Amino acid sequence: MDMEGRGLITGDGELEDVAVEAEKLLALDVRKVVFHLETGSVYGTAIAFPQLARCSNYNKVFIALWIRAWLALALNLFLQLSLVVFVGEATQVMNPLGGMMHLCDFGATLDTCKGPDEVVDGCVGPGGTQFAPPRLYGYTQWAVQKFTKQALLDVLPDQEDAINTKVDPGEYGIENYWCRFVCLFLFTLSVLHEIVTCLRMALLLWSVPSSGKELAWITHKYDDRLRRNVAKYRVGGLLAGVSAQAGSVPLCLVGGHLAFDGHLGHFGRCPGCFVHELRPGCIDEMLYDAMTSAAATSIMKRLEQALEEEETAQEQAEDAGKVHPKQTFWCSIALIRQIIPARVVATLAVMAFYVSRYYWFKCKWSDQWQMWVSKDMYAPQGASYSLGDFVLNGFFKTVPHGSEPFWTMK
Image (cartoon, helix red, strand yellow):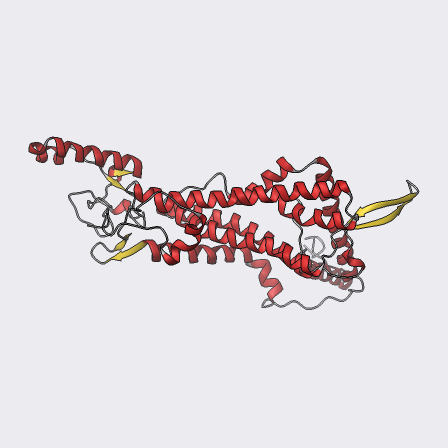
């Protein structure tokens, strides 16, 4: 069968057309909108409506939309910081008060464990006994069973041998070692998307013009159908001082996402295989739906449409005159980017950093048992926990603890 019969192109002109199209495809990643205004969240409205109010000479309607947008932003920040404090309180105060140790690698090699009668490296639990599949429990059930056994020993000390023989509280450990890493990967991948979005907003605010006609967010264009000028919305510039001030908003949000979703998110997920149904990253979108009026939504959609039109015009301008394609080599960065997804690589790097951080701060290597076990646990002296504790406790130990550990690895 000839080349045409197999659907292959043969002519020099056709080959060149395909090469030009391939070059355009490689340029998409470069030409992709880097400076992106998040038109579907409270961050985008908080940036856009002050500028729209300015360009409208502070029309009362636009001022009202500005006030509402900033109220939504304030509520969003309050809720996100509250969640940060509550999750930090649970992991750093309430869990130790409840007698919970760090999970580390307890139960990671469950399939090789034989039970209390046979010692195997890597199979010891936080109770000091050997794992076996039927003896694995979650922390709550294990703590209740351990409490029940200890209560029997305290009430019936003369029956200690019988109680030790008949009552087995089991051990606390992880159900599936690899499921934990799968959950971590999916969680990190979702958070990284939000961080990239915030960074694009920061780049937008850093790069938009700060003087001249490009400052306008509202322009006027003659409509042939209506036979009059109509207002058009676009992403314009910001005054120099306002640009730096507004740019700090998404940058602060990036820092908050890294601190919460990385520090607490990864530490909280290393002990168990689960993903929270509600993360701070989705709160802004929920508040956008709940607190954005129909008028504001209409404007944000028109801003998004204007961004798409500008992107299309930019692509057409860059493609104009490109007739002869460049030669692409296998070692070129543009082609490698099509093979290796950069965001997945970044996800694995961030995940590896925080997993390593978890083991470094929460666990220690046991030469006796050949596994990572929890460090000694100290009970907090109180139940209070603040945003300052969340920020500073890792460096300055602002949450006071007792001098004697309530749990140590046997």
